[in-house]
Each structure stands twice: as structure tokens, then as C-alpha cells.
Length: 64
Ligand code: SF4
Image 1 (cartoon, rainbow, N blue to C red):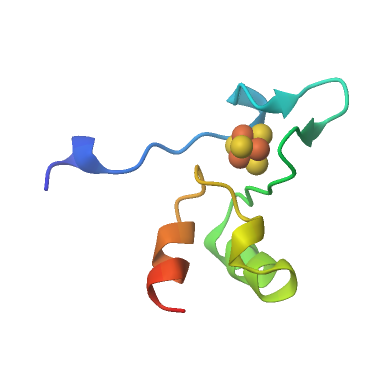
Image 2 (cartoon, rainbow, N blue to C red):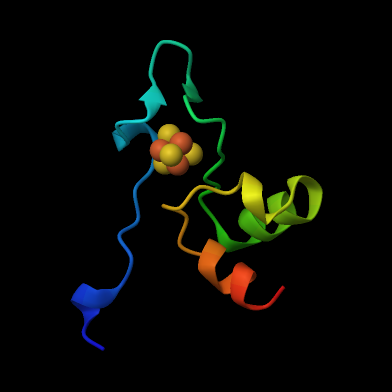
């Protein structure tokens, strides 16, 4: 697998689904910046709360 096969990380401010004025995700997802924040978010809100652009979500889904 080459590095180009890695999922692309998108941060909320650069995402087309981000509402800049409302400062929120328009589809109600969250995209924590760090692995630890992602794991804690998944514990509190569930893995489904994480957006598809989060780098750690697939790993969590695979180890549920
Ligand atoms: S949570 Fe995900 S889908 Fe929503 S704005 Fe952020 S990067 Fe985009």
C-alpha cells in the first residue's frame, strides 16, 4: 500500500460541510484532532458521531 492509499484527513474549517458562521458541522458529526480525543469522543457519543474524515474512526470501527 502506498502513502497515496491513506485516507485523506480533512479538518472541519477546510471541509465543505462545515458552517463557518455557525462554527459547526452541518451533518452533526465531530472530527477530533487527536487520537486520544477521538477515542474519548467515541466512548461518550459513540463511533457513529465521528465523521468519515477522521483518521482514527476506521480503526475504532474495526475493533468494536
Ligand atoms: S465533522 Fe467532518 S463532515 Fe463535519 S465539518 Fe468536520 S470534517 Fe466536515
